[in-house]
Length: 328
Image 1 (cartoon, rainbow, N blue to C red):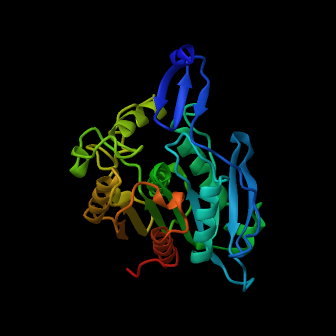
Image 2: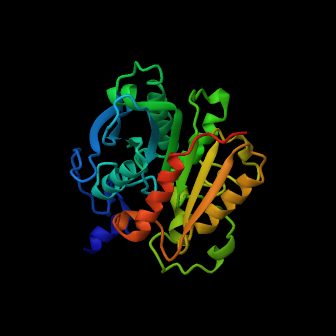
C-alpha cells in the first residue's frame, strides 16, 4: 500500500490520480447506458462519430415527433467533469438530457471530446469547435445526420453546458463572435449552468468559503487549471477568467441571449454573478438573465434528476430554449 501511495504524483480529490508511470486513474464511478427510446418521455437517442480523425463522438437526442414537418431548436450540449472526467453515455448525464429534451422539445447533440491530462487544453476547445462546425454543416439539409437534416431549425441554435462545459459554451460564443476564427454559425443563445470561471484573486463569498464544505472547493479550483492547461497555468487566463484584466471584451460575444444558472452553496456562484453583471454593462447587444437555485450545491441536478429543484432547473432551461431572438 505504501509503495502504491508513493507512485501518485498528482491528485484531484475524489476525481483523478496521476501515477509516476504516467497512468491516469479516474476515481468517479462510471457506467454506460445504451441509447434507446425512453418509454416514459418518448425521447430517442443514438450514438454517432462526429469527427473520426480525433475520435469526437456524441449522443443525439430527439423528442417524440408529433409533426414531422415541424423544425425544432438545436442544443449543442457539453457535460461537466472538470475537463478530465465523464461522458454523455453515463446515466446521470443521459437521464438529465433526456428530461431536458422532453421538457424543451429540442434536438440535442451531447458531445464527448478528448480530456486532460492526456489531451490538455486547448484540445477540449478545439474538439468543441469541430463539433459545432459539424452541426452547422447540416444547415443546407445535406449533412451526414438525418435527424439534423429533417428536424433542426438552424435559426435557433443554442450551446449549453454545466461547470467546465459551461466554460466551453462561453468560449464557443466568443469564437462565434470573431470572424477570423471561421466558426460560421449563428448562435441564438448560450446557457451556462454553474459555470467554471475562476481567478487568482478571491471575490465575494470565496474569501470565507470553507474548503471542507464540498469537493469543488477553492483548493480544488486553484490547482485545476494549471493541471489541465500546463501551457498557460495562469488562473487569470481569459478562457478561465473572462473578466480578467486584458481579457477580450464581452461585447464580442457571438450570440443574442445568455442564461446564467447558479446555486446558492456553490463556491463558483459569485463568478457566475460577476459574469452576468459584467456582460450586462459591457455594451453587448443581447439579453442576459440569471437564475439562482436556493439551498443547493454545484452540480446538484445530476445527483437526483427527479428532485423538485432539478425539475425547476430543467423547466427554466427549457423556457430559455423555447425563446426567439430579441426584437431589437
